[in-house]
Amino acid sequence: MLGEAFAGPPAPTSSPGVNATKRLRLSDGAVVFHKPFSGVHVANALAYGQTAETPPLHDAVGWRLAAALGEPWRELVSPCVLRDYAGEDGALSLQAPGWPGDLAPALNPTWCLPTAFFDALIAQQDRHAGNWRWDGNRLTLIDHGYAFARPDDILNHTDLLAARHRHGAAALLSGERQVLKRLLDDAGLLGIASLLTPDRAQALRERARQMLARDEVLRPGEF
Amino acid sequence: MIRVRFTTSEFNAETQQWVKLPVAELIADGEDVRISGPRAEWISPDIAIIDPETTHRVTRTDGAERWAQLLPFAYRSGDLDVEVTEVAAAEPVGAAFHYSTAA
Image (cartoon, rainbow over all chains, first blue to last red; front, side, top):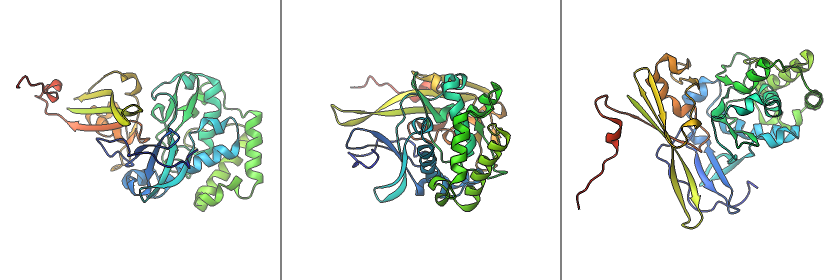
């Protein structure tokens, strides 16, 4: 769906934003966001332990991992691929339905449990209610630029993971154990290892091992 | 005083043009924060933000105006346009909107 041709100019913006993101339409009518590598706010990326290149890359890798894990995670993450627009390489993500700022999903285990597991696995560093969309029926996670952190990288928010722990629901579910085993049984981490730097791939592997060993999701900030 | 305007855009299929829509306006004045607008509930006053210059985690209680200036770093996805302006303390917020009766 993200391979369709672009239709028309981007939406005008009064502020270029932290990532110089452009809102665009595809020929099938879908609204998408293009975050170019050249638009990364380098100081912000470095503050998170990322690099000038990793935010758009990790945005797309987050989706690749969700797709590799299968349901329910595939449906919970906004699709995102690497693609160029106007000669600029970047991450292209599909607009998620709903609105930001709604805390309802953090109170509902149907949404909180699988998203918390996903955020623990990818070492999401900045999951607050501005980085998910809720439409009253469905939760979609967006913006995985600041993820795949390494031990000692900083955490800003991981609100869904914190909520899962607060609700006393840290124990892994059977489906979560299965996907962690499937991930670890594959030397290439289901195709993800080659998309990450070796230290980040190793950190992902170690988080999966830790969760299986303890039979619970990691605590906030355990990267 | 810091003013942060949040807007979004929708595509109008009839006119084949993007239409800018207001979402919310946040005013940080001293230690006070006011959020108003048609979708004011979309903007959380409780989001912490990493200051890229210091790498410190900044919350509203660390200083409302400093926090407000960092808000573009909290909303990176692109569906909200975040515009920060510094407003002179003596200038009423409404002064940004000028209406003229001149023909």
